[in-house]
Length: 155
Image (cartoon, rainbow, N blue to C red):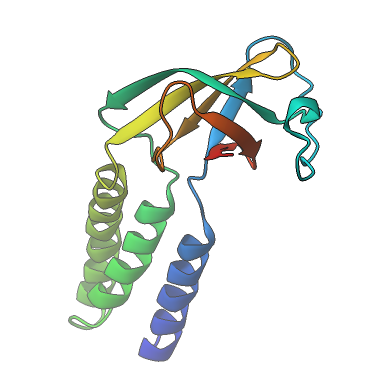
């Protein structure tokens, strides 16, 4: 693999990793068909994806990884290792660089965010939905919220 191809592979991996989103996640604790629709102005009472926050639980700890950090780390480490030595030494350096890069990249991704919040929302139709997200953006218990793309937003 020449330097240009290695850099192209690394840039592609970084671009793809940038497209990944941890995003928000939600689970509907009453039934599995959310059936959300967007609220209209002044239509909060009839909004299917609107509700009131009934509780917030915050957690700190080790996060699960998507594998993107390991992949990007392995590509970059392999490209750097490929620049060392020649013959079998070059192959060994490439493999070692990929392994070490993958481990380092995975650890960086795992330690990037250690706090997340589970927000319980009593929806206008009586369901209870729990949304998991990294930030509260001013949301507190009693806040009126709207759920979009698996995340709660102040309404």
